[in-house]
Image 1 (cartoon, rainbow, N blue to C red):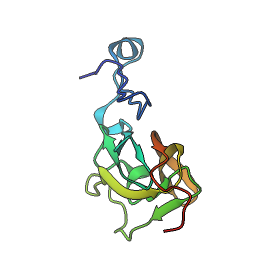
Image 2 (spheres, rainbow, N blue to C red):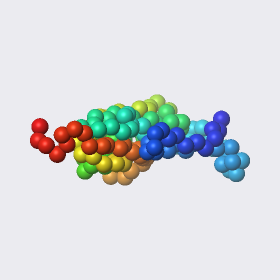
Image 3 (cartoon, rainbow, N blue to C red):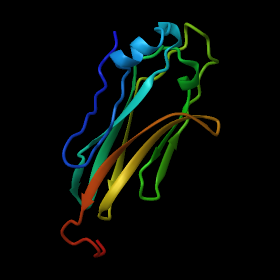
Image 4 (cartoon, rainbow, N blue to C red):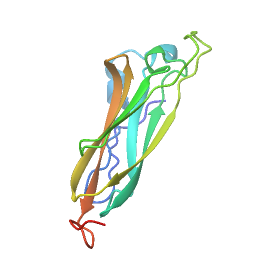
Amino acid sequence: MPQPWRTCCTLAAALSVVFAAGPQAQAQQPESKPESKRPTLAVRVTPPMGFTPLRVRASADVRDGRDDYPEFYCATVEWDWGDGTISENTTDCNPYEAGKSQIQRRFNADHVYRQAGTYRIAFRLKQKTRQVGGATASVQVRSGVGEGFER
């Protein structure tokens, strides 16, 4: 069943934007077969703002689409934290089998920001060097007590 277009924002900084197919898009084009539907990605950061040093937890959810969507199966996970740090994770998987292989639906990662600023966090799923999916969120970091001093 189609969902209306929606924008999910929390606090003053827009944390993530999630688009789902709406009734207008459904009326303009024939309904795609469920087995060919591409999953969508959404990223959420907790907390969305805070003081240095700020530890955040980012969560990426794979929504809708097939459980065996081949491009998302056994993909390399990349988190670009927006501060010059990139985290990457690959896993060993069995060869893809249509109808049997299942994609991962949730990814989590933690990161610590040590300098004030507004950072754009990018989540990417990659097959080799090609990006097959991605989503972004923002986090606002303010100066904490003693920032700039060695600890």
